[in-house]
Every structure is written in C-alpha cells, then in structure tokens.
Length: 304
Image (cartoon, rainbow, N blue to C red; front, top):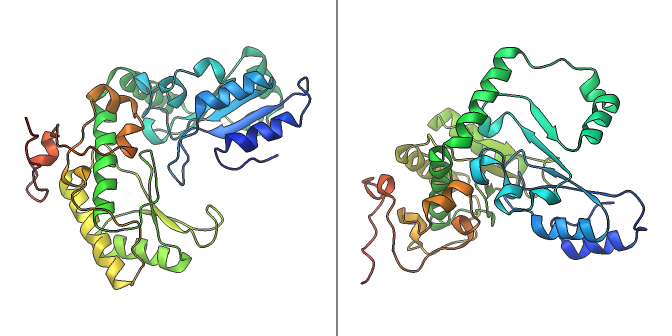
C-alpha cells in the first residue's frame, strides 16, 4: 500500500487496518530527491513502534551532508534507533559509486541470500572501495564541505526567489525550479549547456508527473560566487527568451538574497531545517565569502 508523501495521518490509517502481529515495513526516503522535502523521521519511528512495523529509510540524498559526521537525517534528528534498515550511497556526497544497506545481522543475511541484484553482481573494485572509505572518513571529521554546501544552497534558493523564478518549496539542499513543460524543460537545459556552458539536470516524466517538469539544481561546496552569478543571469535570460512563467515571487530584500544567513556553523554542518525555511528579519551575521563578492550587495549592520 502507498501512503501520500509524508502524510502521517494516512500512514497511521493504513497501519491501523493491519493486525499488529502482521509483518509490516514503512519504506520512505529522508530527503526527497525531486521536491527537496524531508521526512518526519521521529514521527514515523513512533508510528512504527506503536504498530509493530519495521522502517526502511533511503538516505542516499542525506548521507555525507546531514547529521553529525554526515551520518544522515536519522542521526541529525536523533532517531537512528527507530530505523530498522538504512540504505545509502557511495556516490553523490561521497563522490565514488556503489551503495550500502545497514540493518540487523539477520536482515543482511536474508538480503545476501535472496536479493538477485546482489547475488548476480560483482564487488566494486578495490580502488573504488578505498576511495569510498577515504571519502567517508574525511567527511566524518570535516564539516567544511557541509557548511559550504548548505550555505551555497541557501543563498542560491533565496536569490532564485528574489528573481521571481519558480522555486518549489524545498527545505533541503535539493533546489527544484519548476518549468511545467517537457519540451521547454529540455530546451532550458540545452540552452544552458550550449550557450552558457552550464550543465543542469532536466527532470521529466516519468520521474515526475506530467506538468511538473523541472530543473533539479544541486549546489556543491566548490561552486563559487561567480559561478552562481553566471547561473542566475543565464536562467533569468532564458526564462525571458522562452517566455516561461514566473511564480513564487519573493521580496528582493530577503536576507539570503544578499548572502546573509543567521545560522550557526554547527547547525549548517548538520543541515538543520532552519537553514532553508526560516529567513531572519534582522541582519545579524555575515558570511564573509558572499558579502565580499562585488555583485552581491553587503547587508547593513544589525541595529544595536
């Protein structure tokens, strides 16, 4: 049975329909790859315990980027013990390839014995395994990359809103910009590549429903202010050239649009939700890298 995305009421309704002693698994992803939403992890863990269900969480868009040491959203939200099975990737944040599943010894043994995708494949080559291990070890101890990535994501999202571009209401680093037309979505990404040398992933049906085609932009720690300026200027120009709708307009005085972010470094390093869904009204902190950049006006000093 499928419950509506992150709808706890519908999930509980479905769980209530099943006998307590019937085996059940609640399967979900922590950071949604297309909308940028984040699952209510603690509440799902509570429902799983209440109705004697297992939980299977896909953390591929969270590991390396969220939680202490990049352990994921379950670790960030303090509910790892409520997750029966966790899947992750060695690509994306870790920059290699492959993936993993963590669970009880009995569950992992059952997977090894019954999963055709595992049985009829080969192990990743030793150089890739060593690369993945080195990347995980580095990101467990370094917060620098997470801080830069979440800062870049927050600033980009705020500046997209300031331009009136149709950013979907994400609360994560995933930055989806709605186009709403399959052919135009591909036209946007083709123009970005051919005319501006910028690669952005077009997302069309069946990955997303028809009429919700979008660009999925993922800022990284190594994107510079100049790169962000180039992307925003190019998108603004292409939106006009293709006469695409501009929705979700935002006040250009939004603090993030001028590079101001009132979130402490520890929170940035764990990907706290407040980075994305809470914008300060007073300018209380400057992020030096951005406020020094000439094309982004510096914020006024906070009132004493």
